[in-house]
Image 1 (cartoon, rainbow, N blue to C red):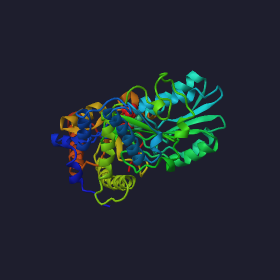
Image 2: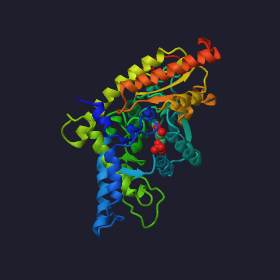
Image 3: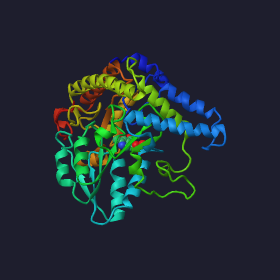
Image 4: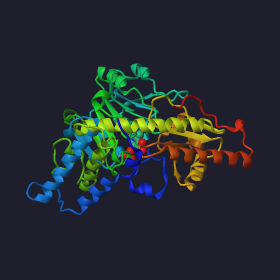
Length: 423
Ligand SMILES: Cc1ncc(COP(=O)(O)O)c(C=O)c1O
């Protein structure tokens, strides 16, 4: 396994601006080959899909290549890769199509750890169909989502279990495979939000037990476009609203309107780029993706351990609890300072971190932190460095010291969040 962060950074021209990007959980920078592929496609004769002239055949090939690429990234059948503008949009349309098959008395299971994009579409579809919503709860002291609770939550009438592969707030990786086995034993479908996880973890949708797996390319060096992956036979059970003349084949019938061919070319380039992160990786693109993402994760895990240890050592910082082994993403607060003020102070030093609830709406509500501004989120991506972690920790420590001097804030003024392990 080999990973050279200097070599990797050279592929991201935007890094030359000098910002520290700990905002990857909200969207990463785009790799140069991705931008080049998008631009090249826009400069090439590409027509709408048809078999009767070459530029129209080209767009067909672009779509097919993008389906192959996503299948190589997450596993699964290229013929089951449906594209859409965002994970949110795709989840809404899958939820709507599935809800057409539900009846009163059925239920769906969602979790309070999830991004709202994998909660509200199910809650709203359930309300329209007269279906019950059951909630899986995370443990506020550890940030874990115990899989055992699903034994009680999933029943004979459960139609869908919607669950994240990783929390975009605290990085927790629920035991999706165990939950999926429980769901499948009762005949329920499993819809997995892989938007946060895909960037960090070698992914195999079959091993996860995901009937549907949604991912957004802008979280993994690609363009603003998303894909939902399912077996073609699973797609075939659903009949979404669609135009009369548009293709009825799967997955095409889930792809409303004309696809963004240029961005699809970018998706293929992004997966090729990810496959090359570890130059020693060999074999098929799928094999190289798995090896490269694992090598990148080893790098980010190391940085993250240093970041967590450093944050813990700063007086006044409270990191929200998360179990070990999660994605390299942490939420924290600096004593009672509004998170947006902390993030702005860091932003003024060209360090990009998010503040708020980042749409992990139920999580922050359950933690009692939503009304006071949520938290500050730092997430590590493979182009980050140890030097950047140092810059970030220095900036947080300076901010903490300034506040102590200015406000006379002491240890007693920490926020009332659950203390626990965050690494
Ligand atoms: C875990 C998670 N799920 C879903 C989404 C929504 O993705 P999209 O912007 O593609 O709708 C996000 C975006 O931040 C996310 O982090």
